Image (tube, rainbow, N blue to C red; front, side, top):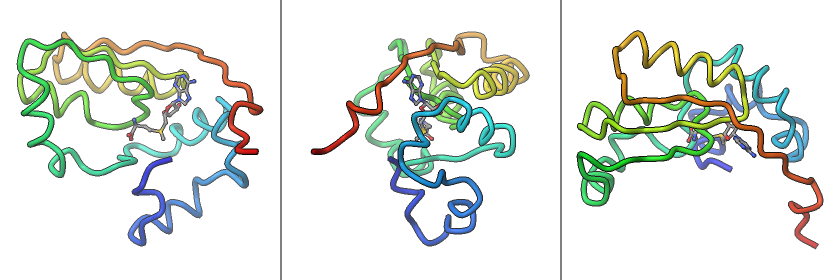
Length: 128
Ligand SMILES: C[S@@+](CC[C@H](N)C(=O)[O-])C[C@H]1O[C@@H](n2cnc3c(N)ncnc32)[C@H](O)[C@@H]1O
């Protein structure tokens, strides 16, 4: 999962939010509970770190599907860079509701936020 979670500056958050085992990430209630307490978190890096790559590859007028948006601000960042047709999907109802409220309050009408349940079997995550 995200690089940021293992970096030093996020150690306090990691202690607060990390599940006891990696399988916890497969539990939808983990995400709902986490997003109820956590306003915003970027699992990779802040948009400013990869904005230049996005601008090379995602042009204004593109349509974007963001899978597992969580409470990231990527959709707003893209919207502000004139990529205004974005669908964000997450299995967490809390993430969907909060992200929806956030983009609506900013008037970003092209940002559509939806809930989607994609069950994953724990057995598919075993490395052996
Ligand atoms: C590691 S977080 C990443 C959040 C965000 N993309 C970011 O970079 O900050 C993974 C997100 O994917 C969602 N998720 C995990 N499995 C999913 C699935 N099978 N279907 C839909 N969303 C899923 C979780 O609810 C969580 O918000």
